[in-house]
Image (cartoon, rainbow, N blue to C red; front, side, top):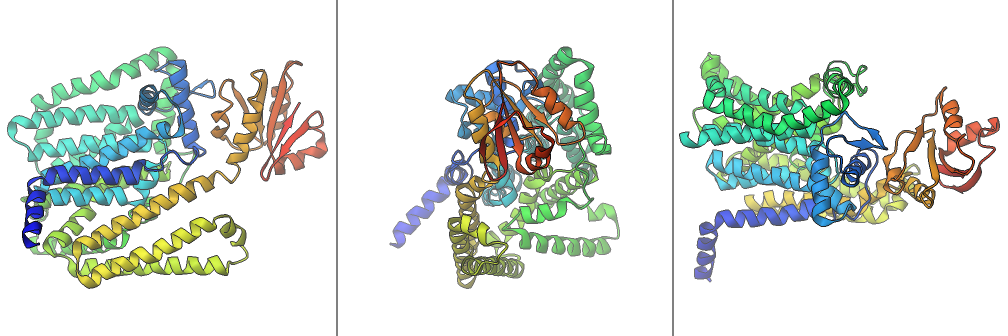
Length: 574
């Protein structure tokens, strides 16, 4: 038996790189691709961007994105191009294929993080742990299952930053290729999200090389001249073509409104003004189940930095990066902190923006766990933080189980509707932390880390099977049903009145424009105008129930017949 174990150990050591790739590929499938198509597209952004991708696929206009048959000039096209490619490859525009490019970008981020960590730290174990931390972080997981633009921006900006930093760990003859790939990925980042695709990578790389005291490296002609040429060859053509097609209208919408105005003053852009620390709770909750160990690591890092500064009595000595681990941690801290501050300073804030700093957080958290798993360092901190995490999760599972059998009146109907989800979630939140506690007792460091990963795997499977499908039950399924009725005849017109833009309507009614009218002082006039068309046309109107009841006494809906009334919306026809 001992000889057998020795043979297995020798085999694993010999083929460790291949085995790591296979393990990562298996877990990427389980975390990112499994169940990807079993739940509907979710309003608002996912249904919007997927329908725009489908329009590009069918209209074959690869320069101008369209939404509801109108120019959509505020976003660059790379995400839509990637979706169009998958539509062509699979000859399908279904839900799974529409989310596939997002999942592939997430997998690319996981693998690149593995290779980056393994190369820079000269440790495959460090790369693997960082990759698993990123893969199992709850915010990264949630956004990898929704077809939106932010995953592409995170992946390509991360790749640009990684490639630039890799130049510091490469042989002299290979450095130029690292820089060329950095410019290539930065161009893709611009095509994924706009000018911020330059700002974030350039800011992080400049600050890092400033800390490394190697700023001159950034401006070497052998790197920067070919790099700029590569960047322009990739990023410039679409910008030139779209400007030729739409001129100053595109410039004002894309550059002025959705870049500068959005950053400087949200009231000039799209609103969404939030407090300065808006992203702090999102980041801390987003790295679950690593949150407590991350907070512990931050406190330890601050304490160590203060101690080192007092001992050094010089900021130059304090910022030392004479070893690989110091250099990587310094880079990861700069990456995370500068990106966090940039988005915090911005006037307009959305929860998805902060996804861009999660690769840096994975490198920081991964370093902590790598030291524990491989070298038995930080044992006290890891054990304490893990125990706190497990206690919180077990208590959450117990409280959930109590609510299942003795529900508060306010939650009774909700819990009844989601009983299967509640059962699985409560059991998983109790069982997996208990297994983690056993790993703590057994002092098995590797299994303790793995138990956290499997905890999140179960959470993700429960989410895709139960939570994501449940979201559409709050009105979206009604809209899709009503739009399908309206789409039975190509001569029909569809009007929505009294609620925000819901692009799930386009999933079936995608051959004609949908008239979307707000419930305000001008809304009634716009509604009457939109529905006072040709006599031979049939007008279907979807109205929110409360709006219908408020306006019904005024006789606005007198010419209409009720087709169907649901819990949140009513479908009328004239």
